[in-house]
Each structure stands twice: as structure tokens, then as C-alpha cells.
Image 1 (tube, rainbow over the protein chains, first blue to last red):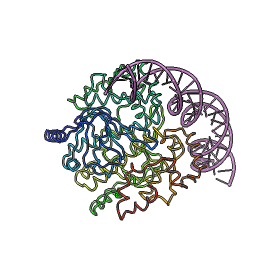
Image 2 (image 1 turned 30 degrees about the vertical axis):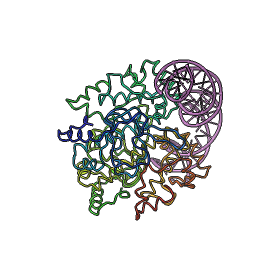
Image 3 (image 1 turned 120 degrees about the vertical axis):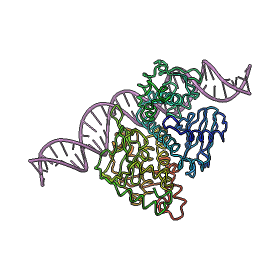
Image 4 (image 1 turned 90 degrees about the horizontal axis):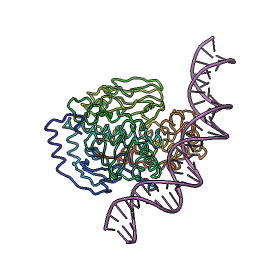
Length: 246
Length: 246
DNA sequence: CGTGTTCTTGACACTATTCAATGAATGTGG
DNA sequence: CCACATTCATTGAATAGTGTCAAGAACACG
């Protein structure tokens, strides 16, 4: 969160304290909050990998977004009566809860923190819109490439990555649920991307072998992530981490 | 906006005044703000029909959302460097501008109004997520049905509708751009829906002949619109307008 | 070592796209 | 008020891309 807005020391301290207060470990494939439930707390991913998803009447699951460390799951849940989708872990994760009233207080009285949350919400919206384009206008190969490139960038931005290699322990079924394709077709497209030497997969670790090539296949434009703030900040670590990719 | 949160008289008065201050008529098919542009003002649709869209490198357009009266176009634009998508009108529309600094002030100092904007943002996100499901998991016929049912409901909620008949002057190309289908296929699916006596189209006016049937085809679950607040408010006009549909 | 999950492969069906042409409706200028 | 241009809706035929089904291989785990 801190990449795009400079927190005051007081704000940073306050946030650190809040996040430390109420942490909970979740195993893999556990729900953090389910569709239809209400929560007075909001949740933030501290480590691991989670996702927003929805189960449809016919039993299929659609993953709408992956959540990585630093992502708020449901920053404004406390104003809603109930969740319209579920949030669950993919891998074991550490999740922090912040009481809704505290959250409300932050949003109204801590402009710096409020700004960071708004920014996060806007990035979320951008990601969602891009996924609509993804599903509406890109073919299967591009979609998969797009998802991989986006994960690369987001993981870079928060630093949970080793150059071009990152931990992304999803099954092909997960990817199918996230891209709106069938697992069989995901498999074929992944094979293609590997044959083209764009990516490599070793167990839970993915490597982007040819970022420029992958980006081209994905027809990736980074503007929707609004990482430009990071790019412009002279001292930003994030800027360095994203160099050459956006 | 006022359907889901009770504004104080002061808040309502203030908003009315702000919205009245800076209005502009836009013709049909005009851009209100373009991708890559920054604006210090935010925009709100007062009348007409607009849409969020993006033009891709290959020239195709993807419409990501339709905007109807009462919808803020870009409530938090002032914190971003530039828009990641464009907003344009479909029909002649009346658009109000509110200066960003005023907006910031409202968000931080007028909890009632801030709540309404947050709610609006959350509904927006819900609509985007649902569209992802739509494109990922529904077939063409359901997608079209879904879009129509959603417009019916949203127009009902704000009252710009005559029972089951509403003005929705989009071309089949627009619908194709919104659903990620080709115009040819949209045409075929619309014919099917008309043959099934689910809808009727007379020029710019659409009529939902069989709401329950259409809803079934669309596999529509209304929870993502978070209209439940309206449903629960004892005196809500919106509740009556939505009766039987959600 | 057996069991369940995940990945991979092939054959085939089907949905939606592409391309191309026609017709209907609408708008425009003389 | 008509001739013409333009946009929009409709139709048909051929094709590409993805889904479906089914079965075997590789791998992980208790």
C-alpha cells in the first residue's frame, strides 16, 4: 500500500500496529469469508495467496481476482449487509483483521491512509475492468499470458519475487476458473507458452523466460494498475523493481 | 445515490447545489473523458446514457459498463494521474462536474455523503465482478439476457422507467462491444429472445415481456447490486419499484 | 504401496466468429 | 419531397476456437 502514497511515520506506525493486532493463519483452500456473510472486520492478506471467487448455481467456480500480500480483501465490507462473493486461500496464508469501526475511523480521520485505501480500491477496479477486456476480447492463449504477466508485475511491485521467478502454486483447474476456460484448454495453452520459451513451470514456481515476448502475447498495457506513481517517485524501491516491465 | 443511505437535509441540499453548479450537455457519441487524460473534476450522469469503454490496439472497443442517471463516472479520479479507460455518451446526456478538491472535502468531512460514494463504488465493483462471471461462464444468450435484466433493474432503482418498458437506445454493435460478442451473434441471440417472447424491442424502447423468464435465462442473482438496503428500508420508494424483481 | 489428485492426450461436437451480401431504416441536401 | 448516402439489422455459409468426454500417465501423500 505504501508504494503509491507516502505515509507519515505516525500513519505507518498506526497501520503496523493495527495489522499486528489480529492475525490469523489460514490453511490452504480455506474460506476467509463467504458469500452472503457479513463481517464487522475487514481482512488484509499479509502472506500467501488468496482469491475472490463465486460458486455459480451449476457448481462451477469463477475466480475473479487473486490476492497477494498487501491486498485488502474487503476494505469497505462494513458498510454492506453481506458479501456478494467469497474470499478463500489458495495457499496457507496469514490474514490480518481490522475492526470495521477502526477502518471507518481511518477513512475519515487519516487522509494519508484513506488515500492508500482509495488507491487500492481503484487499482482493484482497474484489474477487474481489464479482466473483462481479457475475457471479452482476447483469445485463450493471450488470456493465460495476461494473467501470468499481471501476477509477475504485482508480485514485483510488492517484492515477493526472485527476479523473474515467483511462487504461484495454483492448479490448472484454478487457472481455468480464473480465466473462464476449461482445464483441458488451459493445459494446451500452457504447453504452447512453454514451447514458445515464454515461461517455465517447476512445481509451485513459475519463471517468465521472455518478459517482452510474454507481454506481447498478452497485449499487456500496464496503465490500469496505476503503478505510474511508483514510477515517478524518485526514491521508490518499487520503481526499480518494475524497471523494464511497465 | 440516496436510495441506500439516508442523507441529512444539509447533505442533500449541499449535493443538489454542487450538482447544479457545473452542468454540461453532451451530444450522442461524445467523450466525456478519455483514457490517458487527467481531470481535476469528477463527473456524474444526470440524464441520458453513457458508458465506460476502452479501445484496444486492434481497434475493437470493449464497453465495460453502462452509466445511467445518478451514476458517478469517476468519483476518485483526482487521486489518479490519468484515466485507464474512457467515458463517453451513448445518447445526449447532461453531465455534472464537481471539483476534485470539493470531492475530497466531501469524502473526509461529510460521512453521509462519503458513505453514499463508497456504496456506489462497491456496487460498481460488484457489477464489474458479475460481468466477469458473465463473460467467463455464461453463453451468449444468457449474457444478453443478463445485460437486459440488469439494465431493467438499475433503471427501476432510479425510476427512469415505465413499468417494464425502458429507453435503451443502443445499437447491436454497442451490445456486442459490451458483451464481448460479435454484432452478428448478438443479432441472432436477440431474435431468439424475441421469439421466446421474453423481450420486445421497438426502436429505442425495450420491453421485458417476461421478467421471470428472462431472469431465469440470465441466471440472475441480484445480490451483487446490493439493493438489499433499499429492500429493507421501510419507506423506500426504491423498494416498491423493485418489488418482484429481486 | 495404494489412493486420489493433477496433468496430459486424442477424437469429436458445438458455439461463436468471419466474411459477404442484402434489406430496412434513417438522415441529408438540393 | 425525392435521390442519395449512411447506418443499422438481418441472413447464409464456411471456419476457427473452445468445450466435452474419456482415458491414461505422472505425481503427491498417508
